[in-house]
Amino acid sequence: MPPANRSGPIWVASVTLFTLVVVSVVALSGCGGRPTEVSGGGREERAKEDPWQKFVGGFRGEVDWQKVRQLLTDLNSGLSDSTTTATRPRAAEPGELDKLKADLRLTDREAKFLAQSDYTQLDAHYLAECLYLRDAAAGLGVQDADPVPVRAGAAFDWVRRQVVNVPSVFQTPEGVFTQPPVPPAYVLRRGSGTGTERAFVFLALCRQLGLDACLVGAAAADRDWTYTRNKTSNMPDGPFWAVGVKSGDDLLLYSPWRGEAFPGKTADRPATLAELKADPTLVAKWRDDKTAPWDVPDADVKAAELYLSVPLSAVAPRTATLHDKLTGTVGGSYRVNWAELATRLATGGHKVSGWNPPADVFTPVRGLGSFLPAQQGGLEMPPDVKQIYVYYQRAQTSQPTLTLNLPDLKHPAVSQKLLDVARGILIQSYHPQLAQPDSVVWPPLEKIHRGRHNDATKELIDLRDRFTEAVKNRAGAALAKGDDTATWVAKANELYDNLSRARVSEYKAVEVPAVERQIEEFWKAGQQKAGLLLMEIVGTPGAAEATFLLAKSFHERAEKAELEVKRAAGGDSSAAREKAKAAWATAASWWGYYDLYRELQSQSYPGRGDLAKQLAERAVKLAK
Image (cartoon, rainbow, N blue to C red; front, side, top):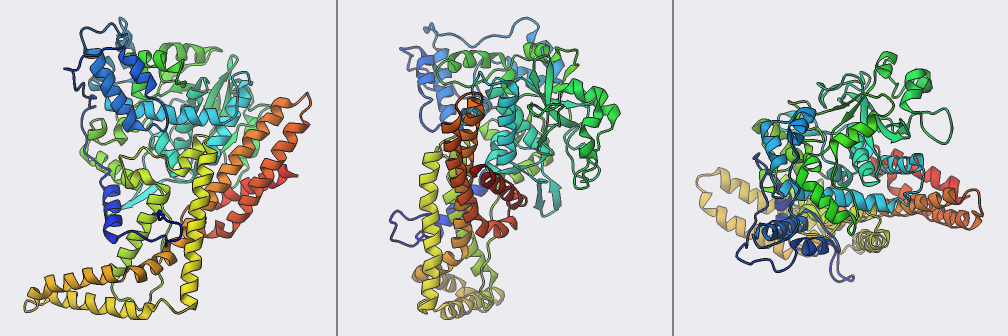
């Protein structure tokens, strides 16, 4: 954690504090259970004003799911007052729930969830996710008047830049498992994901841009996320091969798995579904790609159907009232009218179905509820499946590989403690929501996603300076021989040897408490020495992460400036071009700084180095 005083070393924080940080990260788990309603609470305090007014007014500043939960708690309480004349959540129309249950293949419990009028904790998480993607959509720089290919293309390219496409796997004591798709907000915070997860993020972002989007595949209704279409990779990629965005009476096609729009017949837009069905050779160059060949048979392309899969809270009738109250002032989109969306997408003769296989708990319909523990509104799941999912939730954010070069240190417990504290420093710096679950502070990456670039830059420059200073301080101490590491290591070995002997000898067992006290005093007295070692561990990884995020932030600003150039095309675009060139030059400079760390970070973040190289090349090209 960065010190409050810039003159102090970056490690200033007790081992106990960062042990608590690690424990708090591990505690982000829970068991399965039914959707938890937000408590009505405090009903003896009768509402004296329209509770909707207070609710809508609460969406100021940095808002996360816990703030939304409290706002919904107060709203439920206000609406429960029999004296209020406030608008009640919309009730289901006759036959509406039956149709949703059939179209989305819902369980009885899920249908009951849709029918209730009180807002739930799961609704709070969904609403917070919408706000996250609302801010991302606003930060793209697109306008409602822009053509669909421009808006959809900007959204797709943004997802491609923010989510590095890598297989998501995690290791447990039982072996290595393919990670189920996680909800969009968590994918974005992690910064990497599968093509399927990219597709889900893209769909969520399109909803906030007012774009009708869906999954595209052939006969996919009963195939779940574990379906392996791409035999080359042998990794599950789901039953779909495109995301379609409605444009006129057809759909523009994008491949989140490849990170490319489908090659179109004209340069100004991707291929449409009708064009691809009529001429599958449009993707001929993809079939020749030896790295990731296009392996969808022409017959499947011609038989393509459209599939809708949206979060459970999005189609709940009560969400329609939330949507009506929020869109005019807070902005964003929260309600999905299933029947109307299906009708719009069916224009042009396309078949539209729901995708939510009964045995698949990780579709967009159920995914958020499956991911969350019961105490946060999570849905009931088989215990073994929930445990695997919760295991991954604990490690939802990638962390760099940390090393400590002390070859004479015989006891792993000592180096592990230092590494745990170092990891806590990085978590506190870049992922504070993991260290402090109750915090509403957005981490730097989330600020970038939400378009808060000035705030992110200020924070990241400070972090970069601190971590860079840590590296210099460690090097300076080594040159001055002021960090007698050998003496510290020898003392640590002696104490932990004594502890090991006391624990295994029945005659020395009484000495265990005394030796443990000596070890505790050793850590307290050696904070400065441990601090120098922590500088060695966290300095370079911390500076590398700050530099990467700064390059991302300046790159996103340049992309936004480039959109202004396209918008000005046909008129006098010289001023917009010069502004964009300056933005690209700044981005190129930061990618140049990051190049010093690119190879190092590639070891911990697969695919990041390649993405950075691609973005750097684009920045350099457009800066000319």
